[in-house]
Image (cartoon, rainbow, N blue to C red; front, top):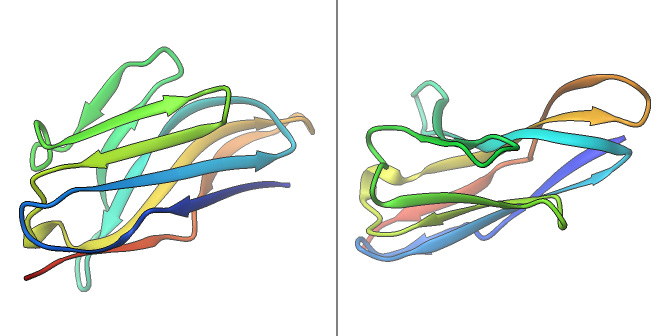
Length: 120
C-alpha cells in the first residue's frame, strides 16, 4: 500500500502565504513525478505545478511567479510554497505522485485534498 498525506491548508488573507506538504509512505520502490492539482467548486480539476525526479518544474500560467514547487526525496515529500495568494486561488488542493511500488506496479497516487481559502 502507498499513501499520500497532505498538510498545510487553511484560511489566509489576500496577499498572504501558505506552504502545502505531501508525504508519501508505504511500499515505495521509486517516486517519479510529483505535483499538485486544485479544484474549485463547479470547476474542473486543474494542474497547478509538477516536478520530475530530475527536478524539472512546470507551472500553470495563473500561478507562475507566485508559487514554487519543490521536493525532498529523502523524505518522499513534495511541497508547494504559495505566495501573494489571491481569492481565485481558493480551492481544494490535491497532491499526486507517480510511484513504483515494491510489488512491481507503477501508477498515480492521490492525496485526500486540503482546503485553501483566500479571503479577507
